[in-house]
Figure 1 (cartoon, rainbow, N blue to C red):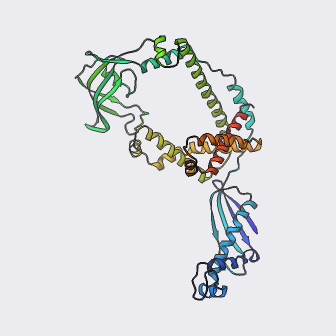
Figure 2 (figure 1 turned 120 degrees about the horizontal axis):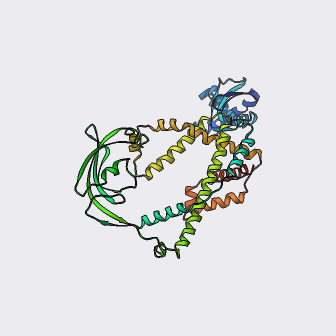
Length: 429
């Protein structure tokens, strides 16, 4: 077998394979046997039709084409190994003219894992570690007090009052939003609840409600923020008409030992504060670690040179799309409605996300390269233990076998744990 390798753009290779007649002609017998299995001829059992009769019926060319397919199927994996091509995805295989007694030439075009040049990455990582390791994480007293206030606000009581709406009140309003005299999509609501001062509506709306009384109607003009999620409204003026339906005064509970005990598991305010401080500190530590690792990965990606296989970009963009669809669904917004409001197609979203997808791919491939170079591995026991944690979400072994591809799960878990171990190693440089 003779092969020639040609590098193609976007981390692809073209491999031209030449098989001598001695190498591929032997498959003619296999092709005949295979064709005989699907032919019905009077006087012969299936699979027992002689070669001469098959050739008389179909012609030798048909048999040779079948033989060539057998030869290519056997040879192309060996060609990939000989070419040292780490193929990903489904290769494109094409054969040239098939002739008896002549060499068989076929080509393979496939995406391959890219070559990655990292440069002097250790110095870059060491510089980041030197900076990040000096940072300390603390929780200030005012942060704990703010969290206590938040807990108290969750237990606030509301009493209807007959007065003007004030900051902190919970109000119910009917409203319409118009542009050019026409109500915009989603621009109408009845008995919409708002806590004044919470800043959950567009800027200026709650300010206009302040001072209104029940039964009063007010019309005013506001501009949507330039970063508003519905891009067709961002930065645009609109006319709002609001009718105040109810005003409720909010009363916060006193933060004392009795209040703390009502939360369930704390004896006094001091115990709650201690628990809050511990939880907030752990959260800040996780955020700091994520930021540290993010800085390392950003620097590694910035300093790397590589091409991006189309198949990996396509798969990553599809994964990002499905994740985003899930987030939109959790917000209670139909996917088609989101696309209409954003004035985007799925294809346009993927185009917008392409740089981020490439960054994710680069980070993953770089970690794999470093883990291989540094011989960083994880034990089978650790992988199986993590898999067992996944299995706990299923009620029976039958459900596990029905819903999980064991090989894919093992590969995924091993990759994730290896990446984690590699990041831990990078943090020690």
